[in-house]
Length: 222
Length: 222
DNA sequence: AAACCAAAAAATATTGAAGATTTTGGTATT
DNA sequence: AATACCAAAATCTTCAATATTTTTTGGTTT
Image (tube, rainbow over all chains, first blue to last red; front, side, top):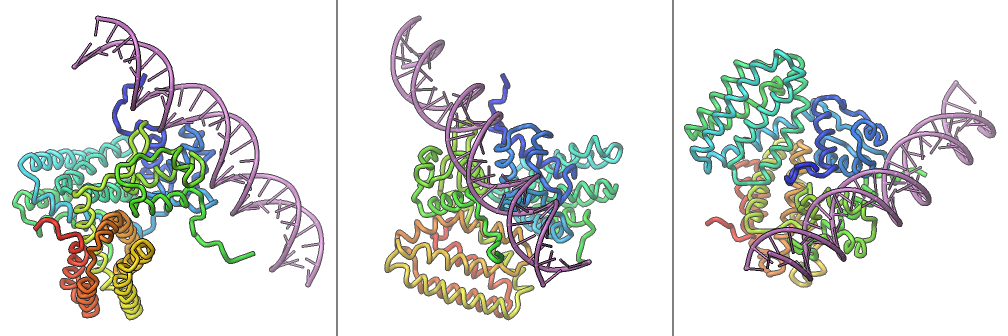
């Protein structure tokens, strides 16, 4: 019936998890709100078991909190969380970039330049219709940062990076909704980053990356 | 009735997950072996659903692999995995240690010294009866490395560290079973590490930590 | 009025059984 | 030997029921 023979998200649990994950990122399900299984079923479909499984999974990812015998709720999103996630993201991603710069060749550089192009474009366009383009915008961002670490040769680092990126999504959308994105500034920082990568300058690259990650959130702690 | 309402995860799923996690670490369930739910139920008890949930969780942690429609199996443990885990552990733990050295005070130093004492002792004793003392030995190790990062002020880093430590357990036990532990050498390295920490010397500390983590596995890549 | 206890109500956790779908392994055919 | 096909096995998903825990409610005592 369905043509999905891929190993990707072919199971109901993963389908649900993906959906809930996205709705949490977008703020449709706000922080600290309770996730009553019965309510969710009516919204997303699926059986109670599938939901438990999916929520257990999301709890393990950190965007849902589970307390024993008391059900699930969306993880809180405090200032401390924001700082923790972004700081750690800067470190992990910086490390992955450093390693990628050792192994990545011309092909990688091409992917990087293409991803930069896409994300620059998304930055410029997203303001026109935030609701419609937000997902696309974030996907371009995800792709760019994924390429940065893609050649690091460490599957676990890639997974951590991806997880932290998802966790920071909520905060990123909050910034976007305040229209606090500065396309030109971001483009500048990305150019400096890519230049440093192409020149294989480790230190400049990690510094540029750190600024790119931290600055949109107001560089807390100055 | 008040008192015992700890967050202690008294749910069946977590109980099963904990058990299976341990058996995988110990090699009771060897890498790549299939995890048939029916078989496991007879061994651990619990319902099929609880098992699915637990295994989904372990799959998310990385020590179990799930392929859609084809069940679960213990994650393979290749040389590449060993290198990935240990390398990443050295980096993450090093970062956490650096941050801990900023915030940790006298109390922390005390915990560190106590943990070092315990793990030195465990190293000396474990050879006498490996099967009986292995768990205790590894717990002392876990505690020591947990203390190192305990003051880093980043819950997510602590969680990553803990996860990587569990993932590396399998390899650590393999080394132990080959009786390839050198208590005196390890004690030396730990002393150098703790000395550097007390002196608040970032670079020496991270270098010592890196050696402590990588060396027991034969320092691959020379 | 505040604190306390017990029973009722609500929600969650767990299990069992059964139907649907997919993979696997064997057999017959070409 | 390769392919097509069928049956058995395993997994995935849902429905339904029971057990356990938390929360609420209402009445009693201090």
